[in-house]
Length: 397
Ligand SMILES: C[S@@+](CC[C@H](N)C(=O)[O-])C[C@H]1O[C@@H](n2cnc3c(N)ncnc32)[C@H](O)[C@@H]1O
Image (tube, rainbow, N blue to C red; front, side, top):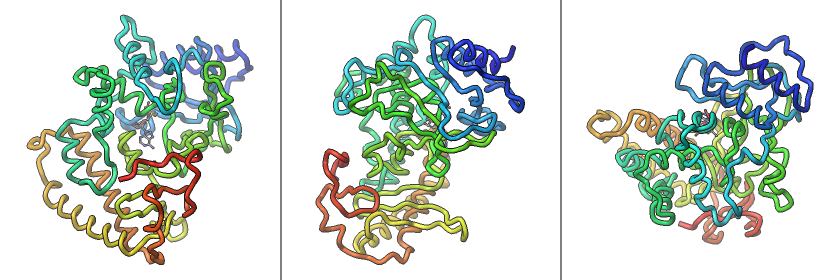
């Protein structure tokens, strides 16, 4: 019996009758690690919708990431998965402010166990050091030269410094670093949730939501577990997406966590729509492609100023000089792993493109933003200074 029907059988022994699907194309996965993981999850009390498969997002690329794919049409508001509390890795006490590293410690322990469970084996199979915070010294040096102290992402050394200096962890232990990167790129703050952590990001195609906000005061995750559901009908073959920065539990991420921060924390350049925030110029805009004209359009979330636009024009010149100096280099000479080099230039192109669209727009200019307080982040599109408790305000620069 193939994995698909094994899972369906498990679920039908559980809480819901699952009829075999006539148009089920293939097993939910072609990967042993993933099928072991799915079986382990179902045998340990998880509910995984039988019309959802785990597949590589590019079936022709054996290295492409996995994602959740509908293998039959889904309605809106269908529960895609429920993961019970005992499978979620979380710190003892949970407070979003004292985000300690106990979740990382637990993932590390799971990975170095004598017989790692299927989830640990899957996480260990993920590419090493692929998010910029965990890049080689050469890669981080090149990225820092590209962004200088002006353009995002900044603070790419924070995580390693924190692990080393604040928590005294061994940052020469490659498995510990991998555990840390898995938490940073797959957890909701300190909650690492299996299967939920297989969901990819896309703000334009997002079709999933959290059934409840696990950070809400009246939710005790140790009782509720995690449940995600569809927000709209999903056609067979479509990928299921969450938003990593504008989802229904993202709260203050709306204000400042944009395309640069997604690149830094998750190691990929997001598709349109993108969100760009440039502290130094106090410029904040969404960049999307207009369906009719096919042109990229910058939608400003705070009014841009001449001063800010002039700063970004100077940054464009500096970026072009950086490209002149490095793009033709031989990676062997700079000791940067190929995946870092490829990703760095993908981000360079997206950054250069976004600033170009911004400075060439004919948006009316005003100096209003320079009267805003130093912590000038404001909720989407308003100049209203937001209530502190409503929104985190990012570190001032
Ligand atoms: C929470 S995991 C998602 C599941 C992951 N793709 C897997 O194969 O297990 C986050 C990672 O998935 C990848 N990812 C998520 N959304 C993506 C997207 N839209 N494009 C490319 N990679 C994406 C990135 O590598 C990111 O660090």
